Length: 275
Image 1 (spheres, rainbow, N blue to C red):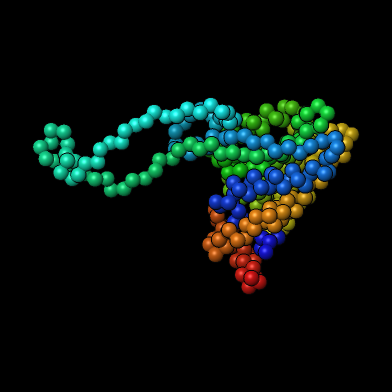
Image 2 (cartoon, one colour):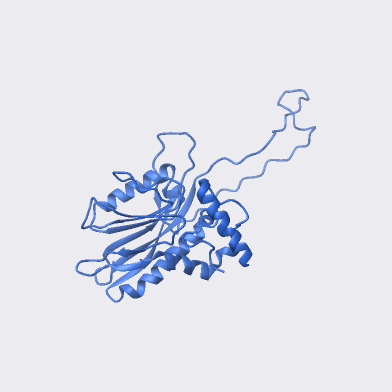
């Protein structure tokens, strides 16, 4: 069965997001490729962003964009410390004093390299980057990752490249723009190189299907359509996320308001009854 939701599935914001993110980028490329040929091509581009948890520490360097290489270094071998029995665990010179055992052992937040896929529309003749399609991820929308993305975005806006940003996450910060966004669960933003500094915005409710949005090309070529709902459906058809998502639990954060929570409960009730 497909997703029980008519538009974006809010349950994808949990542990399945990274898989869905990459799958969606691929389906967008597959959908656009025949519309772009023979003059353009939709290529997948991967980069790595260092996701550093927020620890209340300031003056840290900004996130770095990391690209994979083939330099591999083996760490030095370290001999494990000998295991001591209770009689041996004494403080140096402690004359038999037993070392107190810790109450608990917890992991420290660590940095993680998060792979992100985007879709690049390039012209075949000169390989120019014509349009960049970014699917926002949690790492783009929190902490220093949001700052890194804002800087990357600002640099791109200084070029002649069109920028289409797809934000299918309810969590995290929104794209920094002048003025107030219409209230919505999701957004699509289009910054055309010919209309800067203005950005076209599609606010999307949790309860409605995702829109078909334009993908601009080089003048005088017309825009090509991108059916986002069809791309999401193709991901479900291929993977079957409805078998992997726990619809018996509340959706991943942020918490839904009362009306949306009731709507989600009703949708899932019908979905469960249809199975």
